[in-house]
Length: 120
Image (tube, rainbow, N blue to C red; front, side, top):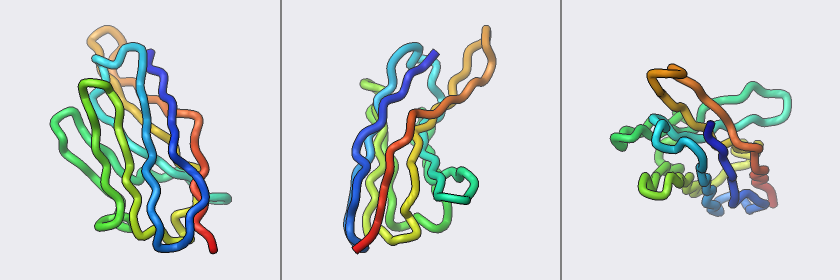
């Protein structure tokens, strides 16, 4: 199994920046995709950004050009740099991973979540 610990959330004014970090432990060698989801009150959880072991990234349209996902594969840590934050970015952000092994197949999991609030 893989355990995830997030950090970096908080309160920021519109136009500000935050950087989220996710540190993985456990069977990290099985991780194939790393990412971030978010869930606003009354909304469904949505994928914000993801990055593969090969460095291929994917972003939801609403954050393109403002958010950047990166990873340090050696330490199995990944980051979400969020710039030009908007009130609509307010949500609980969840670190995400997907793993693969021939024994267990594909599995996925989320961290405990970190609150990001964008307000004056």
